[in-house]
Amino acid sequence: MTASPSLDELQHEYGSKATAVEPGGAEPIPVDDRHGRPSQMFWTWVSPNMEFATIFVGIIAVLFFGLTFWQAVAAIVIGNALGAVAHGLLTSWGPERGLAQMVLSRRPFGYRGNLLPAGINAVVAGVGWFAVNAISGALALSALTGWNGYVCLVIGVALMLAVAFLGYNFVHLFERFTFPVLVVIFLAGMAVILPGTQTGPVGDAVPGGFWIALAASFGYTAGWNPYAADYSRYLPAAAAERAGIFAGLGNFLSSTVLQVAGAAAVTAVGVANWDGANPTGSYISLMPGWLGGITLLAIFIGAISANALNLYSAAMSFAAVGLRLPTAFGRAVIAVVVGLAGLVVAIFALSHVEAYEGFLLVIAYWIAPWLGVVFADRLLDKTTSGRTGDLTPFTSTSHVNLAGPIAMAVAMVVSIFFFSNQQLYVGVLASAIPAIGDITFIVGFVLAFALYAALRPVLNKRAAGAA
Image (cartoon, rainbow, N blue to C red; front, side, top):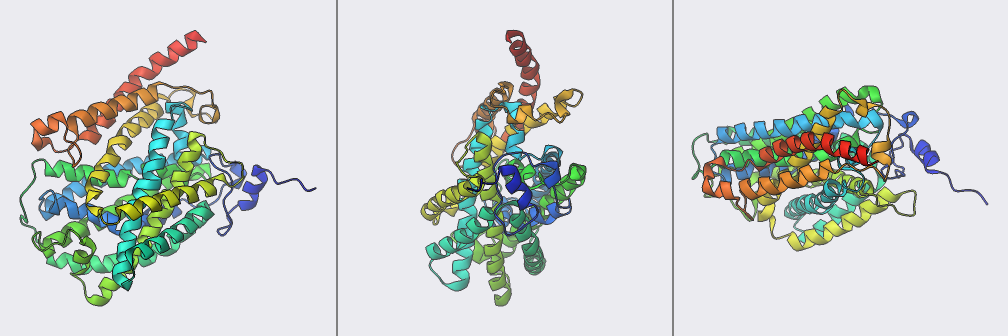
């Protein structure tokens, strides 16, 4: 009887093959199996943003919050810049040890404590974001073909599952080939829309609307942050810094350009004439019929690009939690299961796209405190042994670091309770002082950073003493 190949052998055979199924789960990528160029991070993070969900962030800045076009542009640029800088830094960490983002999160949170961020990310990415993008893609395909929306949803999900199932190499290949197509189509649409932009007031301004719009833009761009290292971990360690630059730049440019297009479209159509039940239809109404049809097709393809990453990273997050299946292709199996769960949610939510604004803000509510913890941990290790090649804090099931989950949980509760300002809940201070808008993500980041920096030395010293 021939022995089954080991995971190391399967990983080595996988190499750079695009049509092979990626083996393994959350294991570190061996140095000998590293491949790729840092420049590929650019299109890998441009293509997923070439979708209507990105455009919708700019739409709500004007339609919901009453900002003028230039106010919306300022909020979009600042929010996206903050999210993109964090994204570039996190991407540069992947090649250092060949680990996925939520596996890297084990050091500041501990192996068990990492269930907090990795668990949230697995559900948000694999169900939340997946459903949002699947719905926008299905509606676009339905508008283009006249087919039933649920049929279009199933078609889109099947394609998304196929890309995510094959894994890392095919995801990069897919994003590379969709990149020029999507960029050309969306830029052509933007060239038609921008000349009709109205720069004056178009509606009643919401108190603190600028800060709410900024938070939404940050929430969208930073929504990719927990995935960052997933798509750079196969790169050689020497490519780390350049990979981060390409990833941050790609994320910022694509998000900003399409969100600005969304804001411009609302001012051109007019708030009174905008169809809230069919925002895609209002957006393409400014274009010639042929370009509108091509744009609908691009929105559908863009949804596949985005959800391929959502499914892949959701599977990586489940693996980072410690979920292991009795197969060498555990990640691929998890991706399919998560995608099917997301399909069920999308079916029930197909006619409720109006909840998107609140979802964007909720994204920032957990990601910002998580960022505060991981960046504080990185800074504290700058002059210690934390940056050695030792993988024990990332792989050992006995690794404990209570500072991370405590800091993140406290920062989330405090920041949301006092500063949240969205459909489901308005915080105490946001309600008393509406002009502050929504600064939950700022408070959450700062508080988590400070708490972790204060708690880690104390708790680690106690743990060492007890040992």
